[in-house]
Image 1 (cartoon, helix red, strand yellow):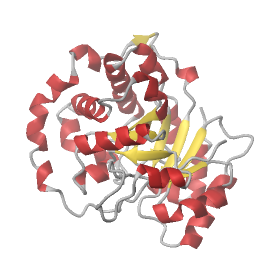
Image 2: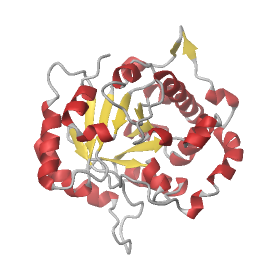
Image 3: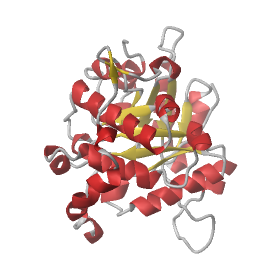
Image 4: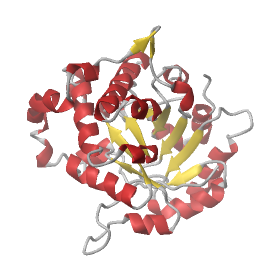
Length: 307
C-alpha cells in the first residue's frame, strides 16, 4: 500500500464563532435553490438498496488526530500500535491517519507501509506573505498526497468559507494531489430538515471548477457537526439517507458514473460499537474517526469492522 500524507491542525474545543457565520442561518433560505432540483435529494433505490456500484468502491477507514498527541514519542507509539492492528485477516480497505504537520514523517516511519499517513489542511496560496500557512508544494515535497478541506471545525472556529475551501480543493488538484472534502450540517439545520440542502451547497461550492476526470482524487466525508466530539452518532439509517442524497447530488453535478465511483465516508463520534452497522449501509464507504483514533485498541477495532 503506498504511503500518502494528509494535512491537519485542528483544536479540540470550539473557542469562538466568527461573526461571518452569524448570518449562516439566513443563507439557508436560498440553500434549496442552490441545491438543484428536488430529485437531487431523493436517493435512487433498487430492491431497497441504493442503485450504486458499491462493490467498485474500496472501503476507506481514516483517523483524524486533530491537536493530538502532544509529543513525538506519543505519535510514534500510537501510529505503530495502530499499524500493528492491520493484519492479513483485516478487511480489504484503505486505512489512513490524518496527523499534525510536525508528526508527519515520524508517523510515516512508525506505520511503515501498513497504512497511509498524512496531515490535514492547506493554504490555497502557493507562496508569499502568509505567516503560519503551509502550501500544497511544501506538502508535496515531503510526500504528502492528500489533505482535508472543509472540516466543520475549520469552518466554524477559523471561519473558512466555501470559497476558501474551494480554493484549497482546486490547488490540491492542480498540484497533482488529492482532497477529502468534508461537509455537514449543524444540529439546528438537521432539526429543520436542511441536511440535504446544506450538503448540496457545500458540495457544489466545494467542487466548483473540478472536472469529472479529476474526481478519482476526491473523496467526501459527511460529518454532521452536531455529532463531532459530542458522543452523538447519526443512526445508520439517517447517515445512509444523507449519503444517498449526497451521491444523487454528485450525479446531478456530473453524472451517475461519477456518483457511483465516489467514496463517501461518515464522520461523527464513530466508535467500535457503531462502526459495524454504519459500514453495513450501502452508501457508506468508510469512516473519518476523531477521538477513537487516539486509542489504538478502539481504532484497531474500527479498522477491523465486521461487514
